[in-house]
Length: 108
Image (cartoon, rainbow, N blue to C red; front, side, top):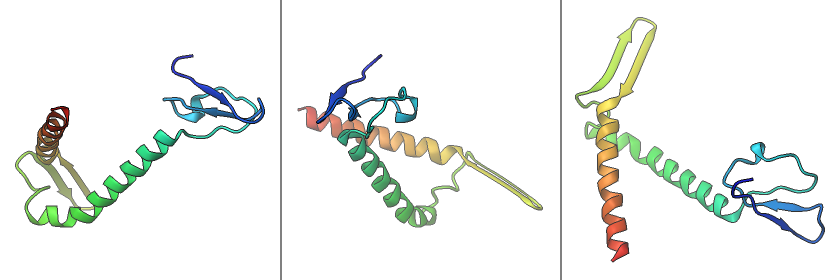
């Protein structure tokens, strides 16, 4: 079992798992299984980031993000397909540079 930590609380029947894998993949043990506090914080952070992106997305469309060269758009009667390749590459490069700079500054 890789990375599994079992913490017995009060009685051996109540087991709390701190596991990097989803709980659905954990073997079935009797007792209570919960997600670690670190996982809760991670999920809350991801949710807040997605909420922020959802709020900012309309303004990003106004500055041209989503309509860059390289974005694939196919429109036919009764069918529309859109795949933002160019926008995805631009966002990836900008986020990579920003995170590299932030980690470099905190490492000093």
